[in-house]
Image (tube, rainbow, N blue to C red; front, side, top):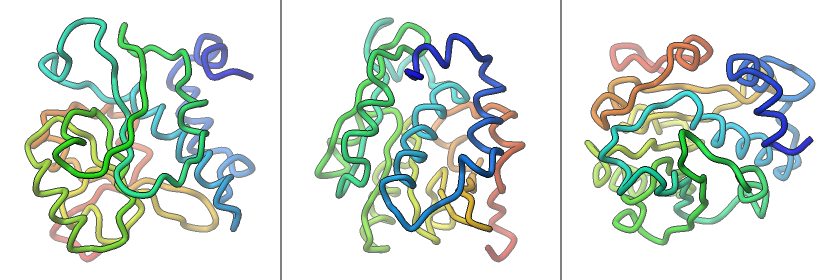
Length: 189
């Protein structure tokens, strides 16, 4: 079923529950294609549960951009997932970046950089900007990243750093926060 038809037929809360809770749907297989297909759907669905400040868009019909910094693990799945989609009147587009300066123009940034020091530099460069940062790295939320994908009991889960999203002036839906592990800097994660 195309994503556009699916999103019209089912309310947002059902979509998020479906993506986050159906075990048969969320098993993280050793096949990276399936894992990154699921992560592409997550990235698109984040657009439904996050509010960006109006200043994040040049005008009312500027695109909402999902960016990838580093190697592209999604193949064409991310473009397929967002093809023809709109969020609050903004068409959804995908861009690929080679550095954090370019990436500062997007709304969601999937960071696929293996070097921890470089990831920290990217997070620091984007700090305070309205760019939702997402990655898989174990130290990502601890380093100031906003959302980390991780696998537990063969399911893709989320860890969210709400303080980092507040610094970026992003409003995360309570529905999204309820389904995620919340990063607490006072705890060892």
